[in-house]
Length: 143
Image 1 (cartoon, rainbow, N blue to C red):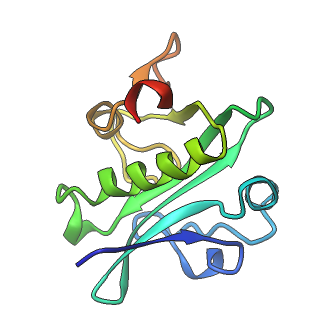
Image 2: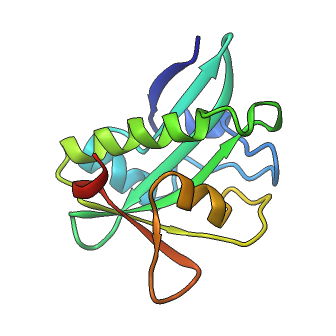
């Protein structure tokens, strides 16, 4: 059974992206800001004690907005609903902190955690803005 938990600064060094190897450092300004504002900077999902997916978010200038900074699900678990679970738990935590909109950079093809595939974003409720690469999720509408 999947186990969801929040990500803190101490967790970040142990969460490398399985696709690009990127590791977010505990000194990342957006992560430090998120923890200062919300007490966490993302959500991780573990299956059988192993991290199977991560979704990291950071605050924007407007306190009612957040930016998806990184998200991934291990290759063996793609298309199993884990990405949706990560987003749902993250959205619930953001709503508790009065965040109303989440932005994300999307890509046509993906193996980068910083710009998830457009198909994933569309499937979990994001809509495309004027710029094809920038997507937004209205939490008032979907939560």
